[in-house]
Image (cartoon, rainbow, N blue to C red; front, side, top):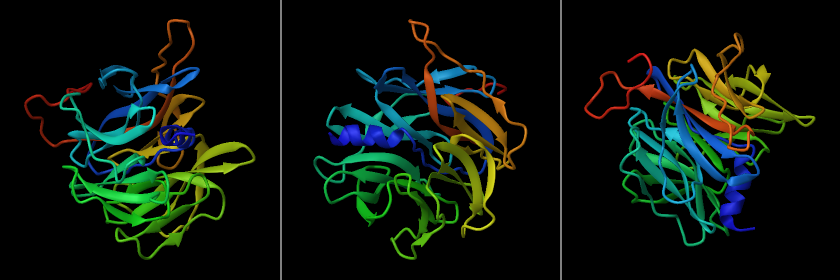
Length: 298
């Protein structure tokens, strides 16, 4: 298996980022073509299902794991450059100025980005050889550091703590220097996402071949099942959670009530539904600037 293929295999059950406080904006979701999981692109949609923008990519798209910066102006993601190379990509919310950051080492893929609360650094998972684990890089591509050999899917809280998924085994927390590691789940789980205030974590729990969205405190207590599904993404106002169920995006209250489907259901030319996954909820800036992404209701 190539390292890019390993990254794609991780994506089958995984998504990690973080929610930052603000007004609720659009959802960035990954659209996958049926029967061709290597071809994926990021689409920005409203809760009414309206397409706001498709993030352009050169050649055959393989973009995964979207993650919004704290001010909502940049989108980080995993960009597949070739069959053997995946890097962290950055693009403006309007789809312009796309670029990629350096890999931590040759033949090592960088996946699943998560922004720091100050927007200056990005945590990510590394896949390949003996440098796997959680790394960080500054947003300009410099100062690449290994944080921990533990984990593949980081989420960075507003309180400065990292939550990491470990490939469907468990959810852990640790400090950004790799210390004070703590296992929070005893059952198979993944996909951690912090609430905007950093007090709770949403995650996916796997049991008997089924997936369910749970929440817990930052110390792993008060676990609560919310709904069947996976890949939870907390809203910037902390009141809602987006998640995936059977290839569609759903939204519910943060307590698991009022579950509703986002009515965006694209089809291929052959009439097959496109699979949607990995939602990331954009925090809307307090004021719009020139060239700022226009969203429904603005």
